[in-house]
Length: 64
Image (cartoon, rainbow, N blue to C red; front, side, top):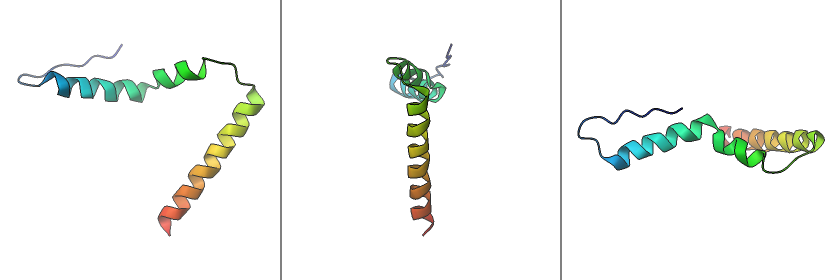
């Protein structure tokens, strides 16, 4: 359970923004989306490898 303490004189928008940020970090929404349909383990490994390759390329471009 995520707990957000609203400080004195803090707007609701600001507290909501902090809540959204904490919620996003937990990864709950990502997990729900991944459980929406079954993905074969071999396909999951392949997509993970492709993502890692893409990330590696992007990092190498930044260092240039």
